[in-house]
Length: 130
Image (tube, rainbow, N blue to C red; front, side):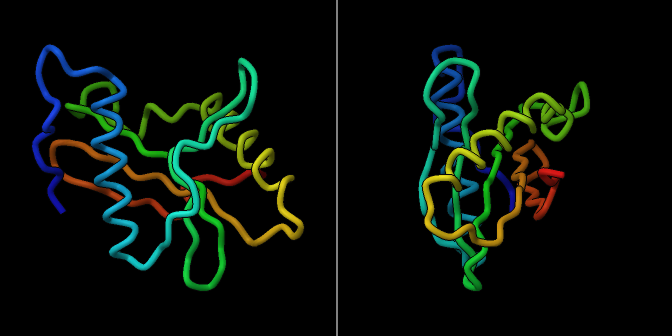
């Protein structure tokens, strides 16, 4: 799938609006693959916490925490290289916070959706909470 040109591209585009376009594209892709949206932009309270771009559910009941990354070029390793160990820890922290609210912990995994000029790439189980 080729990522369409940003409708927000240009000097006036905010980081949030560009991120929203990327999340919209990732969400459409995941829904077409059979996943269902549970929550978007889940944040832990307080400073220094974490955020999860998309929380999805697979048809078999697996909860999928999705990080969406968009880069305008592949310079500096592209979108995938921007998910540092610190970023992963924050996502895992937010996922644990989310799961604590549930009466039963479902199976879960951490996926990444990368959007770059050459297209969209979905990486199921890209990292773990290990």
